[in-house]
Image (cartoon, rainbow, N blue to C red; front, side, top):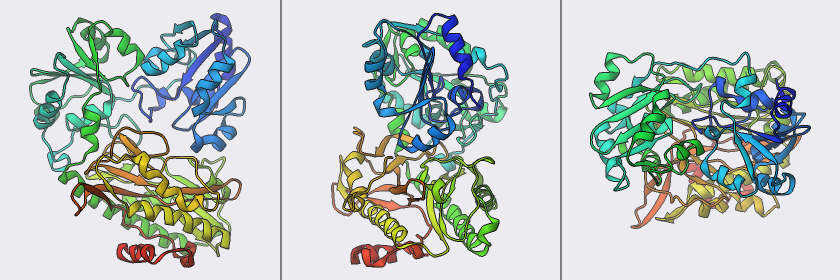
Length: 545
């Protein structure tokens, strides 16, 4: 499924040299609804991070290390590059006099500013050419917005608004909330506009003195929702937002908002980070207890699944059948509201594709010998889960056991870390890689990402990665711990738990409490490679199957 030729015809007809097609939509989130899958429509690439730059006679797709193999398989008419090399490529390939078309609503200001440093002629295409050419485009979702009860959120709307207003820029009369996840968090609401993330696609203005204006396609606003939000929260059409921004005296706008939004309020805004992202990432005691409960239910489903896998004749299984069975076990719990992302179910060589997505075309039958990787998660009113486990079908090789154990050692080294307050995930990342590095091995993705509370499975501002991150880890933050090793064409190993940052018994220090309650795989552990400290930690955690 790709439509490259149609875009190139558009480029030639409109006297352009290049058109940029991003993965992000106007909400600039990682996940997009079907009607905004522009990059998929253009290239056939189905991953959650990427950028296409299409010329009159050529096409280039930029993806991160998770998707290198997948992109090459799905987008065969595109040259594949690393996403981290996009600016070097632009400097060496595009001429300053070229005309580049893009839609400013789909890019951050920082991206457009950087592009302008090299390209003189940038044309705002509104609507984006994909929107014009996509004749059978799905309809925009119109889910019902529902209250998220305080027994799950742990904090009232008024309390959250009070905290947000206390952190707003002093001269700003309102804070523009461009991220629907932030709107959902601050107003204690949820929706179903995205397949795996329970949000409504909306934006908001939080006025310093009183009201909150919510902008979106709110076709169904129930009395329960109005009572939940109160009189000070008012709903408007999405089309009304721009005029409100233009008429306002001074708006605080986050620098990660779209270039178009920043241009609209350019003369009367304060560009300053929104306080909501950090507030949302620090879970309160109710949310943390909810995450523990969610992981209990999730752990039960995973343990059932593991038992089921080993009771089957492997030759009767395939990747889709296996992941569907795990979903069924999750949904046996009445608390489960769905999956937190599309499961990554890969046997053998498919497990080496970091964010592989099994389809009817690619699904692989299990064999009597091999390694099976399953990365999955669930959504519960109490919290969000994300876990990766690897199973050995048949007898694993010595090489596979060594690889698994080296990954496990890094996973445990990070899980056992005690670190001073102010430490960032960037500073801890090497702990998870150290044991692999001793054998000349590594992995090309980050080690950990933040996780929301019945929100997105990927949440900032914190993370654990080689890339610099200015947000220190703080008590209450939930983060994944997922080192891996991938032998292309053969197998993949990844071990993932979720952890919550807690106050250490040592003043001024923090540690990780592991939330995930699923054992590791005994048959893949080479005990001779583990230290006594690692073995003791495994035994204390009940970590072996």
